[in-house]
Image (cartoon, rainbow, N blue to C red; front, side, top):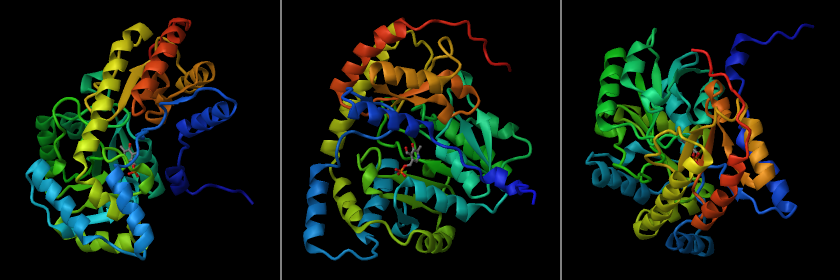
Amino acid sequence: MKNVPAPRDAVAAVDPFHAIALSRIAGDLAAAGVDVIHMEFGQPSTSAPLRAIAEAHQVLDSKAMGYWESNALKARIARHYADAYGVAVDPEQVILTCGASPALVLALSCLFTPGARVAVARPGYVAYRNTLKALYLEPVELDCGPEERFGLTAAALAKLDPAPDGVILASPANPTGTIIPRDELAQIVRVCRERGIRIVSDEIYHGLSYVEPAASMLEFEGDAFIVNSFSKYFSMPGWRLGWLLVPPASIVAARARMGNLFLTAPVIAQRAGLVAFDCDDVLQAYLDTYACNRQLMLDALPAMGLATIAPPDGAFYIYADIGHLTEDSLAFCERLLRETGIATAPGVDFDPIGGSRFMRFSFAVSTAEVERAIERMIPWFAAQPHPAVPAPAG
Ligand SMILES: Cc1ncc(COP(=O)(O)O)c(C=O)c1O
């Protein structure tokens, strides 16, 4: 019998994350005694704040852990929106999730039905494209290059014909770290209102800014769905805790989906997360380390011959153009790893078209590791042949 794939299967095909394959090679190299420096994943190498860890020990030793939702944490998150952005949020609008990833699934499933078209920036976080496809939604990728500061713009959204049903925005963004300026956010909201485009704003890198602090989409659009997490600023990726902020009209729909798809977030993470919210002293010290690492990388890039990078306003990434050295970023990153022990992420993970000419460094490691990485990378990059790589058409 002929096995003809249904048209929907093409939409649902989810691509692999190449950095995971590189990380496996890094693991094998480390097992063989190589000093591997992990700059491939966007995860802090620091622990959760110690006071949060102490709370977790307490919970383990003394409390039952059933399905549970912390009203205190929801109230604390609501207060954070008043303190940090000056916007009023009802704690009932906060859905506690197992990280930003399920929050994104909830948001998309509340807002869209199969076949809906959702705009995303290219380059962008790989899971946007793949989560959309897994939910039978259609990613509409907008090419965002140096002219757009590698970010989605109101003008690009205004030009899309037909208008998409939704858009996922990220500021600071992954893989670039670029922040969308406030006036551009306001313009984006204007276009979205005019064209009936629903907004999902992924604010997972908030708190990690080296220029002006990133604005929340909620300051401009009360109807936006806001995704956030404890995985980045709070340095708690493995604790699996995040939240989705939904407009009042969507609370019932979002809670129904949370209950059916995921039940609740882990008790231990919720208790520790509440404590982490008041550990700014520790978390600001982590930010100081990233700021120092970022500066070290920026200072080293010219010596590595990397002149074109996306504006690293926030997060902990540098997305660099390596088009003068290769048109196969995956092979290039693997060679860098095998020859220097430095694991990075190839641009193809974030941009299946132009990403073959880019790579991403995560500097969320220790300063000593960044220094060692730079020491090895400067001579390695200098020794690379410069093939005449044709510029991509268009
Ligand atoms: C932009 C962005 N959104 C969401 C996520 C998923 O984060 P979480 O660990 O909270 O699920 C990541 C992880 O790297 C990310 O970079």
